[in-house]
Length: 318
Image (cartoon, rainbow, N blue to C red; front, side):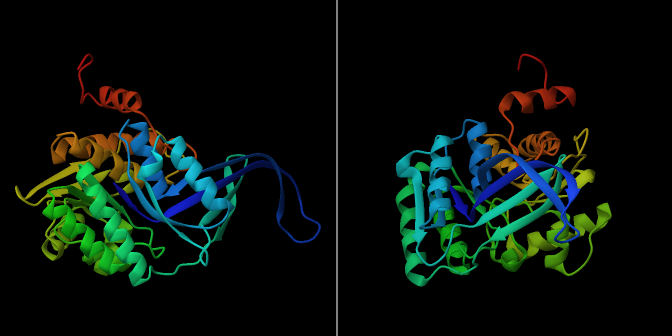
C-alpha cells in the first residue's frame, strides 16, 4: 500500500538555438512531451517494475491532470478498485513541468496548492486503509509535504499497521520527521536528517550519531540515511549494528526520484522475506542504476541482478 502525495510530472524536451528577443532567456523548441507519475506515484512505478502490485491512496484534483494521473496508475497495473483517491474540486492536481534542452533542465514550473486534508477527508482515508490493510504486506508512507499526510493520518496509519503486523516504511519530510514512530524504517537523505536535527551531517561519525538520535526519538526497527555519492548508512536498532554501504553508481546523471527507488526496493524485498541488511544492499544497488538515467526513472529486477553481479554480491544462477 502506497500512501502519500501524488504528483503528475511533465517533461518538455527540446533544443535551444537562440535567445529570446523579449528577454535574456533561451527559446526552447519543444520536440517531445512526456507525462509520468511523480511523488508517491513514482514509488508505485518502481514497485510495478519489481512486479510488486500496489494499492494507492492519495489525492488529485477534478481536472484533466487528475484524469491523466488515474490513467497512468492503471498503466502500472494498479487495478481500478486499488486506486483509492480523494478527488478535490477546490485543489488542483499537483503538476510539475520540467523543460529540458540538450539533456539539461532549463527550468521547472510547479502548479500546486498545499492545503492539508480536512477531518472529514482524514476519516475517509483511515476508512480506506482499514478496508485494504488486510491485502497488504507493507505500507509505504511517501511524504512530499503537500498536505495529504497530516499528523493525525500518520499516527493512525502507523497504529493500524502495527496492530495488523504490517511493515511500515517512510520516506519523510522534515516537517513531520519525528512523528514517524514505531515504524520499520525511515529513509531520509543526509540533508533532510541534518535539517531535522539542526546540524550539518558530513562525516561517518556524524551520520552514526544522527542515526542513534533519530532511533532514540522514534523507536524504529532501522534507520537509513542516504548519503549521495558516499552511499548509505543503515542502523539496525535490535542488534545495534551499523552498515556503511558504498555507492554503486558508475555515473550520476540525475538524482531525481532516487529516494523513491530506495524505499520501493527496500520495502518490496523486506516484505518478500529478506533481512534489513540484504534489503539495504538491493536498495543501494537499485539507486545506483537509476541515478544514471534521466528523470524519475525506474529499473527492473534484471537490472538489479546485473548490478549485484557486478558488485560480487550475487552468484550467477542464483
